[in-house]
Picture: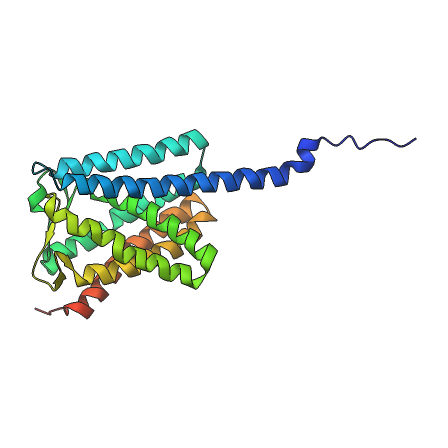
Length: 246
């Protein structure tokens, strides 16, 4: 007499089921991150119509972004997005060195128009703004890289050269920060456009390590990312404006 296979169907199908679940979560995650980019673009555009805008609108927008991301992490128990947020937060605090260099050494960046509490030479909310940018560019860059290879990396470099400078341009109009004493396209320095293209590629490369590793790796990658931002800005500034020795 043949004994039927009594292995539970759920166990036999579990690897495939897990893959489907992971794929669905990845699609939802990508959609959410794209949505935050859309929200930010629209919000910043509307803020140009608000002459009262200052540091508080920057803080408010970042609170909204982080609330949306945290909601998704909790709702879906998404450890990957949580690691990306930690990665971005460490980048944001490490990047304060680059901000201080741009303010004090190159004297091209001015945050005084926004007012509000400062963290070293940056607005208090700036590390959290970078956190959101890192999550956005890091995750989308990783998706493009996985899907299109080196062309995907080039694509995220182009995205970085367009997306972040959009905020740089709008920042002057909504009283967040402004640039001067450097070569610029409208109100955005050439070194910012060049530097942030390289930064976007760097974030995608680091995001690959974050995506397949531990919380400790996220912290280490964030430290490298923050230092890399300083290097990218310094090299770009040297190319477009030349670093002037005292």
